[in-house]
Length: 446
Image (cartoon, rainbow, N blue to C red; front, side, top):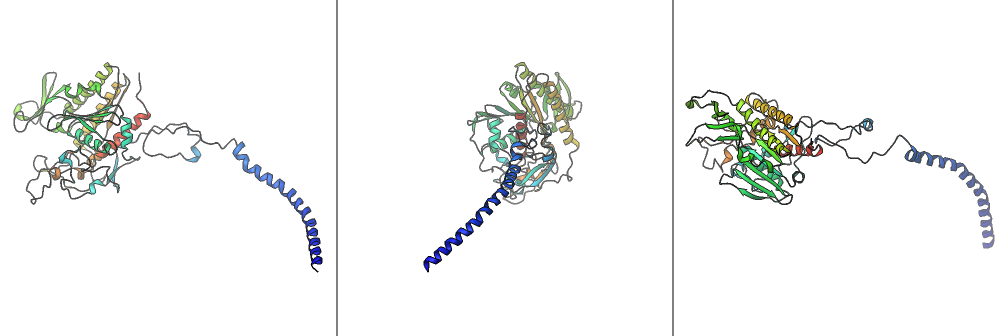
């Protein structure tokens, strides 16, 4: 019984095999052309198509540091070799709320002047720390301390001018100190109007030169001596100009002192004065002296560097308006806690005129410098973005806890300088983007 069953199963298996083998062979012959066709269609575009190519391994040149974006697919091949020179205009835009906040605090940075430590001095609101400048047509990246230090390796950066030059430099040092230690290598007197810092990690030096007129002059003393400033419009101040040969980048900040009473001298003669009636000079405004002072300073830089056969980078920071509500010397305050919207405050009048003169003189100097080569001159245009930040000043908190004993009838306010950290940090974000664009477009040598 078992034997018969086994033979029957064997016979059936052979019978099935005989029927399946021919069918399988026929199926394979039928499928083979289809399989080969599929393989051909799959691999041909990769190895043989003349229209689809991998992009070349070449760097993308970006002249504006606004954003990194690829062109549309339809234009990629036709525009791959085109360089678009559309530098970002950082001067126009609006302040938008930002949740990230500053890189540093007034307690973690030791280079901040006491009168600009707004939070430690008792300022109760912190909203002013959480706004970011948004240019109208491009993007302003956050400050990159490592990148800045790389760009100024083995260089000497000088901030020359008034107390806003110091204010900006202190902001910059605080941001850089978040990634690298700095040493104060020189300080002059209690007011520290002349100082120098060194970053050993990059062998970089930063210097501060106090020169509110840029040219030679005598500062007024409200308690004794002259009641008016005196400026020699055609003589650069050698307190900073003597060191021009040692400088690689100069950031110039001036104009606020030109609003004060002054006597203007040129060619050894008095041209006139501003608000100095007791001296019996011809009354004049400060616009022409401001223009001549900047022209004298820029010409001195260009001529001295050209005589040595070397170039230099020069930044002229435009005017930063104050926000006194009332006269600065008669109890004026600045108590706003939010930025102006763009349409709330217009750039006009004196603020606009000072800015116009500064940019115009910088452009004139740039044309002169082009005759020699090796120079880069640019305007750091902060006037509008500064105008829209009435909330960024120390105000009454220039002094520690001004209302600890109740509200006083008159409390001194600072509505010129900026809290640190604060809106002035944005100036250095823009400065860095300007320097990055320089790296892509090196100085031209004649």
